[in-house]
Length: 387
Image (tube, rainbow, N blue to C red; front, side):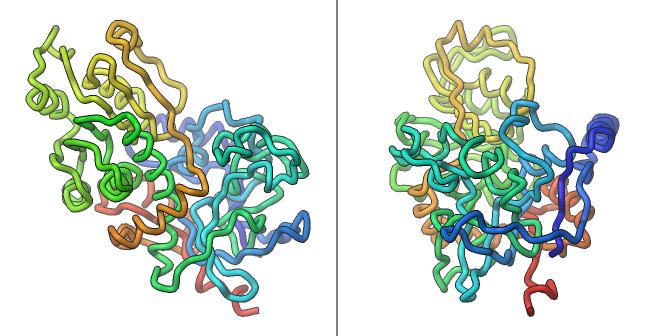
């Protein structure tokens, strides 16, 4: 089968990190990723099936991995070589379409009894992601034994598969996984009952989080969103933002909205009840702490890396930074409705065959500036599908 394989190639990985640091803003490079002909993964048991991807998205965590920016925290919970790709819509043997729920939880790993988190339905908190009958891997796309969506075939446990309604296009279906992340974030925000929310970032995750907050049934109060580019600003408004501002304007706008005073030229005396950081960079986290209200919460949705940041305002103002990782199966079920109601398939801006993976990764890394949102691999034309 054809697959984009990521290997533990230290020299190439180091080269990717250096290239990224020397050319700021250029975007991700392919790093230790190469197109190979590989044997398809074998299903570990009769509870597993083969999936043939149709579309597989490229997300921010994928980009951070291939260009060497991801944290070493992940090293014990991935196994090499792995095939990336966890945003997937594909076919089963009977040609029915499914969306992948990529978390490799206790049920998937054949662990019985399951951990407490899995027993309670919180598969995103699974304690056994490096155990059971599989190699380590927090998700499909980071485990050597499962394969991933950037290939013509991978394997999945039946509990990981969500049927796709006929009314959803492939483009809409490939948006279900990232939308499930956004639903999880929206539900977390709704539980905080904020009167005001600031969303930092209008990439895929930021836009989907705005849409989810307006569609999961517990709409928060006033939503202000930062966006760098014209297309991002247009989409943020369409998907439910009350205000859309440039990143540098956020402090001034939150100050005006909340009647805050200004301390030392940048620190607000009040702020937004909840700030949703959909970027995860040192700058975005610093800005989040600048504009969140005393006693408020920063919800960290974008995957961070190692950062150095001044936590004095967190301590002094009794604010909190709360991580928001992945999703539950219930989030996926809700995501189907959000994708349909908000017509999120339109956010798939470009698709590429596997053979053009370098162009695809560069496009995804530079999506905002180029007026794009989601870039995906299109496997529908691969010859293997006709066998």
